[in-house]
Length: 248
Image 1 (cartoon, rainbow, N blue to C red):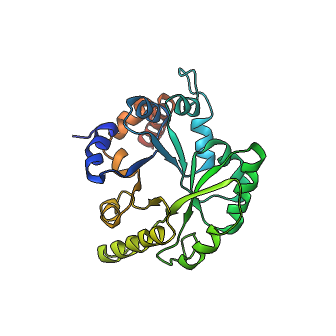
Image 2 (image 1 turned 90 degrees about the vertical axis):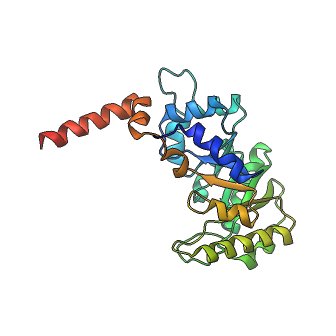
């Protein structure tokens, strides 16, 4: 039997000890996210695409009288941006997110600092480190972290490091690379080490993660038909497509 996402979260929390759980809500309908916020099951929500965030969090969806963004603020939900960030979207992300986890270049770091300075905000960020040295991934090299930390950026607060591992690694390789990122945070006396997703979070916790990012493991346990029913517009679209398929 499929579980409600809030129950899945409660089952996961004991496994991750004192680590912060960032619930990744990308692709989830308005009502599912709204219900999650009101449940109190999490205080940290992660989004990876600005356009999708804009469409779901900044636009009112009847019968709700508030946007999801307003609901997050009222319920003290911290918003994390975890996807690849282009410099031309930096202003929007700085305006709406508490923590930007995916700062992957000096150019982006400087752009965020500039945008934050316009409003006097001290923007909290994590440096994304390509600890796997994967050419398909974004991020600083391990040896570049010190240079990024030494930049005189008045409106940036670098809280720690984040990584996304390469695919198709053995568990031993995953654990080793997680331990390498943890070691970097220790060397530079940084507070946050954000690593571990649905497929590898237990190894990340073992290696010392104090923040993990989970989405599919939480929402895949939720009956997809129920999700659609929570969003009437999505449900109508799915029914229309189904009728078209049957007619063919």
